[in-house]
Length: 178
Image 1 (cartoon, one colour):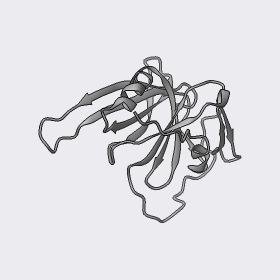
Image 2 (spheres, one colour):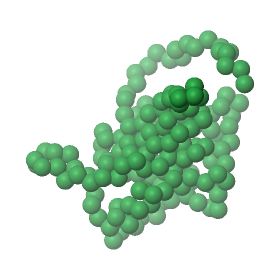
Image 3 (cartoon, one colour):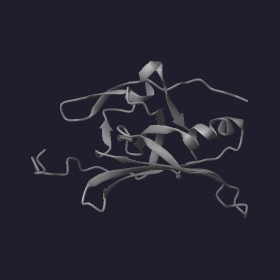
């Protein structure tokens, strides 16, 4: 593989952008999940193994973020670390029943930022929870809820999804009420 640039890197648009995450979707990681790419490298479709579904995460506003960082090991090898963070506000049986899965499972995450970009993280190796902690807060205005952090080591920069509709087409819309 050649590590040489193959094109100029230019700013394509002159538009406003807003920081933050609008939506997060989690897919149970499975090596049989299939991703189809366009000629320019965007993911055009996702086919999940064994009729699995993706799941939308309803997080507290302005608590979600993601990062895609270059890392280097002691032998000079390079890799990426994908991280997703969010806070869940409820302390109920819906969260408690999913707590073990969130704590112990492996996931691929699709994050949609507030500017509409959809990024797939953990596609190859998956993301594992490194934190799943509840904090009540001490004062009335303190933040409270379940803080979830997922991270994983990847061999690629997070891939762009052509459009959020690619993931919403495979989301489980079942609503569970206790």
